Length: 105
Image 1 (cartoon, helix red, strand yellow):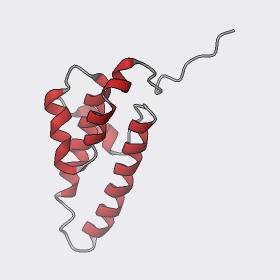
Image 2 (tube, helix red, strand yellow; image 1 turned 135 degrees about the vertical axis):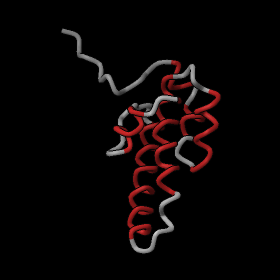
Image 3 (cartoon, helix red, strand yellow; image 1 turned 30 degrees about the horizontal axis):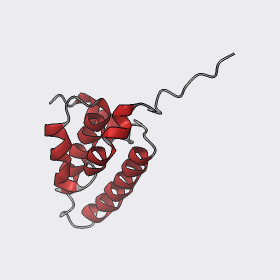
Image 4 (cartoon, one colour; image 1 turned 45 degrees about the horizontal axis):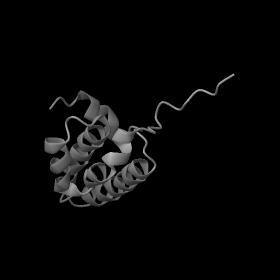
């Protein structure tokens, strides 16, 4: 019997060809580059929407004390996002993934 493929693991040309653009998604305002230029790539667009939510979150890190905790949380989520891109996965980030799904751009 054939093993079922992990649906989160993309082993197609879209993920391979758009990995760099998807990586930009997790570096603050650079998330706008794939968001505006790669709407035809499901892989890059998925990560760009999550990156946009993270970018919006970074604007709230100026709040004393809470901002520090938020910055650490957003930094960890960005790192997880980068690792997902490098492994060609479309895994939703905690909290951010749910918000990104509701985002229609």
